[in-house]
Amino acid sequence: MIEKDNEAMVMMVQIGTKFFASCVLAIFFIALSYASQTQASSTYHSYIFQPFLSDVPLLNLTQLKRDPNLYDCGLERDNEEFCGEGSRYYNTDVDARLMVDQSDRATALEITSDFSLSAYTEMQLSLRKDGFQVRDVYKNDQRFSVSEKLAIYGEREVDKALVEFINQGSSSDPIEISLKLMTVSSNSELDRTVNFVSDGVTISILFSIHKE
Image (cartoon, rainbow, N blue to C red):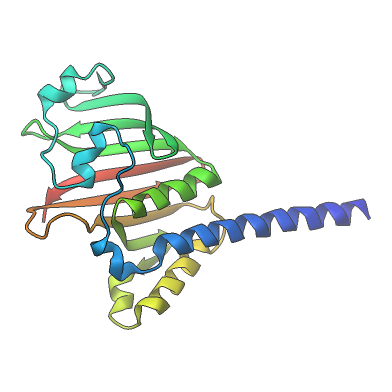
C-alpha cells in the first residue's frame, strides 16, 4: 500500500512539473506574429547585454579591458575572450563570456547557468521578453522549423505544435533552440541571433551579432 502511495506521489510530481513547463512555454511561444511589434524590456541588464538586445554600437576592446568586472580568459591569445562572474539575466544568475572579433569588437556573448526547471523556463521567457522569436528547435533527434510550418499551417496551429514538440519527453532532455531578435530597426545591417542549449546539466545562451 505504501509503495502504491509513493508511486502515485511521484507520478503527481512529474505531471505537475510537466504542466508547469507547458504553461510557461505556452506563454513564451504564443503570438509569433506579434514578436516584431514588441519592444525590448526595460528591466535592467548589465551593459554588456545591450548591443545584443538592441541596435546600439558594439562594445570595443578598450571598453572591455577597462571594466573591473571582466578579465581576459582567452586560452590561446590575449584580448580574444573576456569573462565575468556574478552577472544576471533577469532573475537568473549566470556566468558571462564575451568574444572579440578581428576588428576588436565584441560580437558574441555566452551566458551559462546550472540547469533547473526554473532556470530552464525563466531564461526562455527572458528571451521572449527581449523580442527574440523562435526559428528552429532540435530535440530527440528531430527538428521543428517554424518557417516551414508557417508555410503550411496557421499561426495558432504552429504555436500549439511548437509547444507540444518542446514538451515531448522531459524538460531535462537535451534541446537546442535558435532564435532571432525581431525588435531592431529594419534598416539595421546586423542580425542578432541566439542559440539556446540545455542538456539537463547546464543551460547556455549564445548571443551573436553578424551581417545579414
